[in-house]
Amino acid sequence: MEPLSEKTTKHTVVFVDDSSFIINRLDRFFREQLDFTVLGQGRDGNDAIALYEKHLPDLLTLDISMPNKRGNDAAKEIVSKHPEAKIMIISAVRGNEILECLSLGVKGYMEKPLRFEDQAYVNDFLETVHEIFPELKSAKG
Amino acid sequence: MNRKTLMIQDKLTNLCPLFSTTAVECVKGMFGKSCEIKMPWEVVEQLQGEFDRILTLGSSSKRFRAITCAGIQDDSLCSFLDQQNVSTAYASDILGEFVNTYTGMLADNDEFRVSFGTLEQAVPVLYTNGHSYLPFIWGIQGYIYIGIHWVYIGYSIRENTPLS
Image: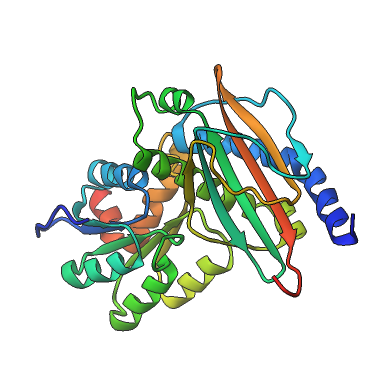
């Protein structure tokens, strides 16, 4: 699944999650709150690798628990080939798998559920993205 | 009943409030909807129930195997999502994400981790028209209500045997 492809001066993102419910919410949040350009959407770890290779997005968001190939395995493959890759894990999975991802070079982690109605959660989410892209924070003042 | 089964039954009994309150938090977090527990959740010898749709998610560690499941009737699902009809694909998507998130939230709780450690989650599977596999092992089950509509939630767990 990969509907969009456009390069602009905005930061770009690809979402990979096996739930379209989650992807739709992320899509809206990144467009409205962060002004990102969405380049593609995938459903499993294999999609993540293919979409990253194709678009080289500024940011790849990855779920962990997905069919065919888990997000942590996809992250490992992507980072080994593209050490500069900026990957953010967004998952209900906690614990060792997340620590393993962060030790691999994954840049950020946010837990599910996506509580976008909760301002503290939104602030935490924005702060995580700003830590990956400090220029966004300074641009916003 | 053997020692391992008694141990699990005891742990589940202690964790009953955690399972129900986590379900309420999960619904609130995912859908922004308030729900309530009308009857205390119970520890049972086998999860039981027939629903239009039931979704199961396996998880495992070296020591334990578990199944989380969510069951719902079609009219409740439509009401819950504020839609006239819900396709099987969308039901699978929503229930799968709900069960996945709920299981993750449980796993993040210290009380749960002390009891069962960390279990790795598999991929959810949706069954329709009551056809589901609910193994004959001890678990916790209960309902959460949003108005008159409800969602059934169950979690059963067993310790691995040398042959499993």
